[in-house]
Length: 323
Image (cartoon, rainbow, N blue to C red; front, side, top):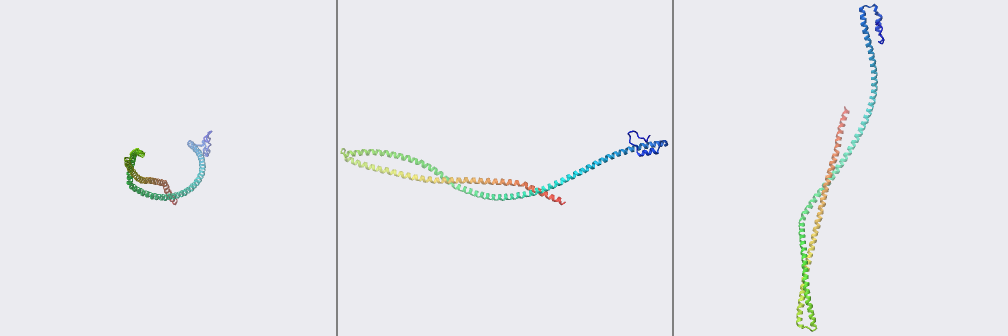
């Protein structure tokens, strides 16, 4: 029967039940039976579609419930995450304000330190400039003194040559004096031998062994000659001694004068050397100060750049808050 469904098929719908109840096969015509069969087929298909629709609806309801649960869970998670982000934002803003205050304070300290360093640099630069001017003036004076001492140095060279020649002459005079002394001593020995012979003759004359008349005259002549020779010898020795003393005194004075000039030149040389060291020290100090200034300038340029960037960020932030 059409009203009965096969085993395993879905139960008949109310429409099929009504159709089987009111349209019995025995009372129907062939056309009605054909229409009934088509209607039953359509009703079965409709029933199957309804069943499938119910299944899909149940699945959709299940999916909807799952989606709602997922939505509620996501909303809860979003709320927790939003709360975390809000707290994190507040902490970041607070930390940013603290960092900004610290940055402003450090910039103020750096600016004060820069001003102190600039003031100290200007003072040291002014002092070094004054010292440099004084050093240049001293160097100029020393150059003038050196130019003035050049004739003295030439005189010293001439005096050194003169001293050398005088020393050579003194050695020569000493040699000549020694030769003269030796010659005079030899002559004195000869005269002494003659006088001893004369004394011996005089002694013999006193004894009466020799004629005294000729001997007396000879003795007087020899005594006069000996006295004259002795006087001439003593006079020449005295004159030579006076001349040597005078030359020695002149040499001593010349030596003292040359030694004084040499000491003065040595003093000026040391002064020039100290002045050169002083100028070199001033130059090194100025270079070191210039390098320190450049290093300080390079060190503070990034700070100024960050300060300009921070001011730009502040202006942008204020504009955003106003909007």
